[in-house]
Length: 216
View 1 (cartoon, rainbow, N blue to C red):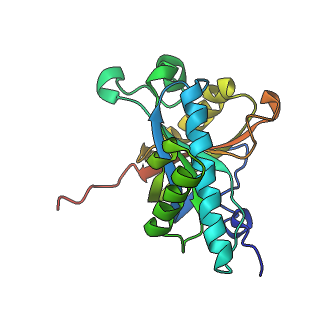
View 2 (cartoon, rainbow, N blue to C red; view 1 turned 45 degrees about the horizontal axis):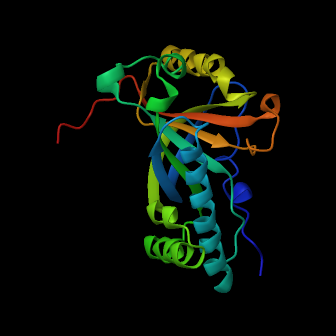
View 3 (tube, rainbow, N blue to C red; view 1 turned 30 degrees about the vertical axis):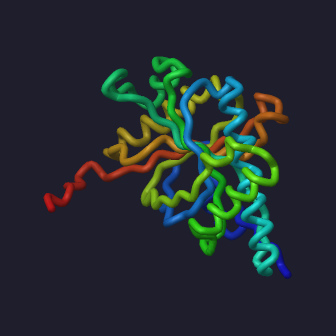
């Protein structure tokens, strides 16, 4: 039985350059958990610790069915209350919005054949056998981001605004309109990697400036 390597199967999804570039992102499915607060707080770590056992539970089910795969990189969608904080540019937001006010959706991508029932079964197993009640908040999630602009950020998260400024300038020059949540893919394990060596894909879904919403 050959193990599926999602980072190779979806190579473009897990690849970016240190300059802004375009990518078309099709439907993808994930195990996911949502939360709010400073990523340095214990609650954020607890959400990660709840997410991974479910991902590996799904993997075990697939392996038993001869469809094994490697669990890929952690990802996150990030947003904040725009009614409360307005709409700062993407490079200003990390500086202007308190970290405690950021909301997030943590994600781990799954093969396309994984469905909601499989994730629910894995969640039940983790909660019951591993005595992890927090895992009950993990759920199946799918999204189709469509056209996105992205860039590779190398270095600590605190230096992301400078990289996001490049992304923002590129979008403005091309007349791109924001069309979704800020998306980060953590290619490095930030719990075990020196900050200056961290590699993070920063991704923004967009619409062309001349796009007109369908009135229907």
